[in-house]
Length: 111
Image (cartoon, rainbow, N blue to C red):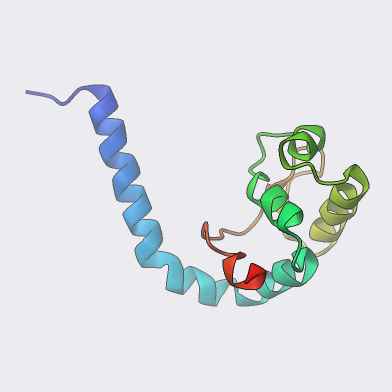
């Protein structure tokens, strides 16, 4: 008997998440310089960190600004800096982070 599509999709997502966890040390080493630059640009700003996590290419800057309450000028400057550092793919209108970061990436910086 075949599994329903929802169960199959759920299982595939679980496998993907497990692979990401296992691959994280290698990804971190590969993206070491880029991640250090990202930390430098975001600094200790929780709003900038939240904005970066929303930069998946599906949102325009105004939506990111509304969802994070970041100042529009700060967001625009951040996007320009990320673009200049080659940390974004595509254009800045719908920013998409060019590197992968774990959900707790900025955690240590905030503490």
